[in-house]
Amino acid sequence: MTSALLAHVSSSGGGGGGGSNFLLLLAGFAAVVAGLGVRSREGRKPVAWLLVTVGVAVILTGFVWRDEPRPDVTLTLASPDPGVAVPADTPVPVSVSVIGGKVATSPTGSGGHLHLSVDGTLEQMPYGTTAEVRLPPGSHTLRVEYVDNKHLSYKPPIAVEVRVTAVPATPSGVE
Image 1 (tube, helix red, strand yellow):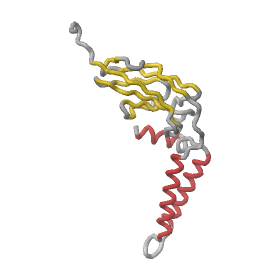
Image 2: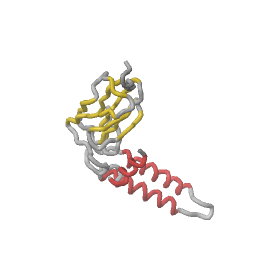
Image 3: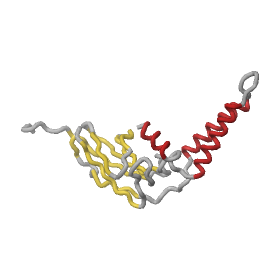
């Protein structure tokens, strides 16, 4: 999953956040380079360390800065239904309807992204509105969240969740 996030960030200019993000990244990089270029007989001067530290902070800000406001998006979970029993350890289709927003269909595509979590753990970042999960036997919470093009949650989150129970398959002829 880390490689998917890194590929997305590198292919869309820091998450596709727009011009101010690019300027923050550029300014941070320039500060780091300037700080690394400062030399003295005793080693690096304190101003060099300050430039590097500030540069790194500005670069990190460029990756998480949100240029766009929270969109008016509504999610509806089409499947599975709340409280339904699903077969354990087999693919369970998850389908969501996104109203008022666009879902990116690739790492470089425009629009928001969906994050599919099972019991609070991110399982998938599907490019589209459908996915499949395999659930071990037991009760589970499936959550789908619409996040921005940098994979950051909106405040408040735009999400929908459902509880389902995964039941083991009954052996043939046994009840």
